[in-house]
Length: 508
Ligand code: G6P
Image 1 (tube, rainbow, N blue to C red):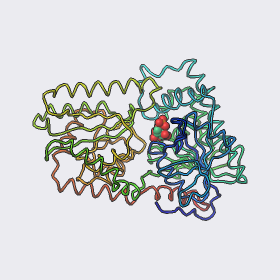
Image 2 (image 1 turned 45 degrees about the vertical axis):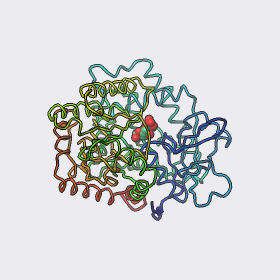
Image 3 (image 1 turned 45 degrees about the horizontal axis):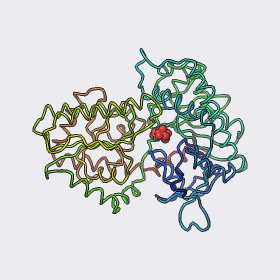
């Protein structure tokens, strides 16, 4: 990725905040090891952080070795080399990019409440529309305690870490907060550092005001107020940005301006904006050319029995919002409709177990396994199983599979963006077809070059899979080329530059 130029007039340094760290330290056989943090958000921010001249990154100390590293630096930031072989920087690091990380450790009970009881089960479920509200959620004493004694103090602890970094830089900085874990941070940072320029990027959908009425005013008003501490609240889609402002209007009674996409709060203007996130196209293509990916691709090719065999792929965390079970049901239905495809089409699912401390996520992983077993059992007599389910987190394997697949299915119930669709579009070399949910942010950019699916309609998804598998080569090729061109035009650098341009003085 290219070095990023900061537009004139922006305060430095950039102070980033995300919950996930870009690196996870472990102790194995007495030795300290480190690996890069997983997930699209952290990957995108790592690409950026390594290209900025003056950056600090505040994030959670995820495990005991992270805490040990933080303690060795007495709670101040740790210089970390963010390369393929991440490590604490010592001596001359050559050309390897070094980023100061402030690893914040909060008491584990507080963190469990913040992350395992409020952020992931409640906020994630509200914002992805996952509740069947006739039966859930039940907000009782535990949930109130989790908010008051988990979400609130953890947010304040991270806000103080961010504010410390800003103060250490002389009180001015461009503060870029990320995601739903930290709705109460901006307000507090503004109190302590009135000269900071503050933006927060929400990477998940923002639903309309009624969805927030699942929470009582004591929670929902506080969350929305917290975000109004920002100068810019950013989303992946215009729809989410508009929903945010109508939420502000309906829940807080403030008059918003939907033409200017802003609201006046305490004599300040808060803007809501949309910037669709993307990927480092050149970096991913380099990886796709690497020997590690070539080896994985060879293995995959061997496991496909005949020349005309086709491969459907999905790559996801095992998150209920990803709609994995309905995707398998649709595949099963398609095989029943078209028995001639049985034995010829394989569904490879590369799934990374996620948030298993949240009961709904643990149950969902069980449902995934059960559905795969049901489908595979129906084709016991075939030489191979129609669904190849692998619970792994293996980037070279995922990239190899992207490059080979005939169809990539992304049928999410809701998804802020979905970078899997963008990744596959730029590395596929088999005229692969995207089967893409209309409820993903990426559908706004790639929908016209994909086969659209409606995530609750299993019949339609089965037909869409068949359409994609039987699409004429020319059409497949043209669609893929058009999708790749869209991603090339709006890559991760363009995503970041657009935000900086809007934040620079003179705009808005
Ligand atoms: C989503 C969220 C990120 C989060 C990631 C992984 O992409 O928007 O903020 O880091 O999922 O989730 P996890 O709970 O494993 O950090």
